[in-house]
Image 1 (cartoon, rainbow, N blue to C red):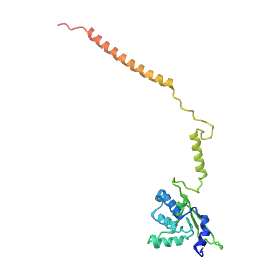
Image 2 (image 1 turned 30 degrees about the vertical axis):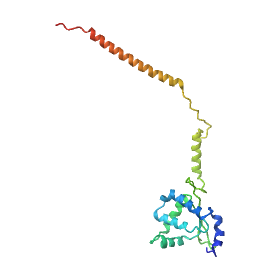
Image 3 (image 1 turned 180 degrees about the vertical axis):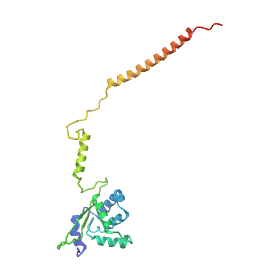
Image 4 (image 1 turned 45 degrees about the vertical axis):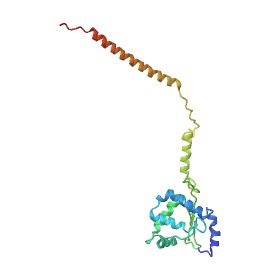
Length: 207
């Protein structure tokens, strides 16, 4: 879909933007790549970077066709270009990691039109914004939270009893250790005394 001028384009796609400025958009992209760049192959990373270049007018929003993006990559980024399947792999990974949403459009005759590529914000804590947690993940988190609070897996109202030091047991153990040491000392003295008595009681050999 072609537009007469930049002003018309911005007015049409600005409502899709999640950013107040181009600088803000670029900052969020850098934060995302600091964590997820290794998720992409080299060719996929090139495709991701090239897609962001089309987001300068309506911050974080692009409407370039895949064919246009691939031709730009071959001309400006990679002499041999990249395949369409590589671009789609990049697209799936970006969507999975929460940085990209895609609105697919149809022409009046039913043919495919250009997509709307909408980049999402990414915060400093690596939390994906605008991507709600799946029911399975939400249920797992709630279960873990209940377990930490002592409610149990089934949600019973159990509470963890506060820890109290058992002074009686502690004192008893100390007394036992002292008694054992005293008993061992007495046993050693008895054995030494018996050995000395045996020496004195032994008859002397006659010369």
